[in-house]
Image (cartoon, rainbow, N blue to C red; front, side):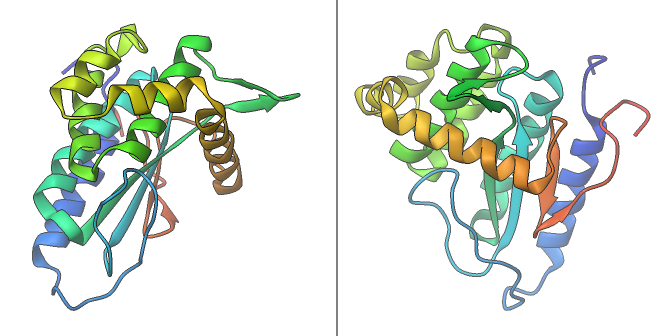
Length: 196
């Protein structure tokens, strides 16, 4: 495993699998929204990752949770929110404009693709996360995401509004580090280093 891996996120993900595997299907947790249209609905565990698209820790957390989201289906809903700032109307992020663009792309794919295709897109894009936003069209086409719709979202006001709202949700949640993991509305307080 690489030095920047987020074993804490992987451990939380494994705990989620165990919890969901043994949870009675009629146990209600939360109802969630966001992070890919056409996703699961009803009673489910809401997992929100507050990340930055080019943060190595955030990428590892997303990579840990997407397979779980697929495996447990409607029992878990994964949502991504992004950490950044709105400085006098200009959206910024720690890793620069390429990360702002990557954040917008991921949000716009979530708006214009099915939940399953959004998860696949995230996995594809995270394979080359250092090059984000480059190559997103290849991942979109590979996973049946409407490139023109996403491009219109990213280049238009919709993408800016989605990212601004996401930044606000991360700020409200107190997310300052990527990843900040929220499970059923409760912040995971474990570390994000190899010692965690």
